[in-house]
Image (cartoon, rainbow, N blue to C red; front, side, top):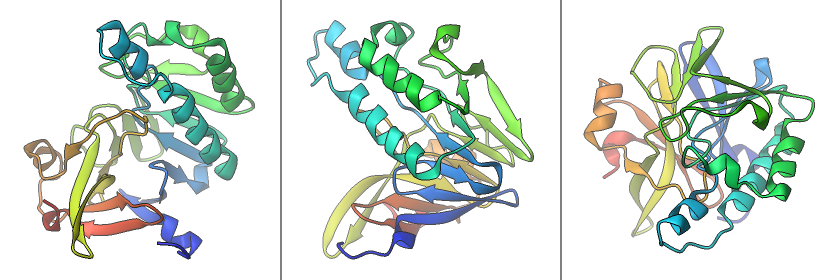
Amino acid sequence: MDGESPAARAAAVNVAGVTLVADLSGTLFWEDESLLVVSDLHLEKGSSFAIRGVLLPPYDTVATLGRLAAVIARHDPRMVIALGDSFHDRNAHDRLSAPDRGALAALQLRRDWIWISGNHDPALPSDLGGVVASEVAVGPIAFRHEPTGAVGEIAGHLHPKARVSTRGRSMERRCFAYDGERAVMPAFGSYSGGLSIRDAAFSKIFQTPGFMAHVLGDNKLHTIAASRCY
């Protein structure tokens, strides 16, 4: 809706005693650490599909990096952690255009950048800037690609989405899933799909039915119990 307050575009996510800000963009910002977390960029998904004969508009990388640049400009983080599947396949980084490489380098300028390896991009090269890790711990929080359900974990991989009813119509959107001890982030990539938070994969991570979703709406985050989604 028009006229929403800036606060409606963000919401607190508590993970193992740490408070982070869930942003309408689908990122998390840990203010005390000046740390921005983004998951599942899936850069060059369009070109990956084109190789297999499925034609999609080849603008997903430009769009994804553009949205990420806007988030980074707003928060100016000291560190960025990309939670895996930043590239859609093992060779996607080789297909980055020169302008897209330049845009990525500009985002990394004057800040630490950590690439977490994912199942789509398990062997990232060293020439992308930043450092590559299988997972990283900052204080009590462990950042990794695939969620295990551990306390203090922030992960991606599952691309959570939620279907809710609002004003007499159904809406299906990406979402954060969390329960106070762990969180799963939405996919950030422009062409990324999603998995319903009512899927059994989430019940293995969140072992009580009381976990919550921050659903990415048009102009605000909608906080809703996962049990109310369908």
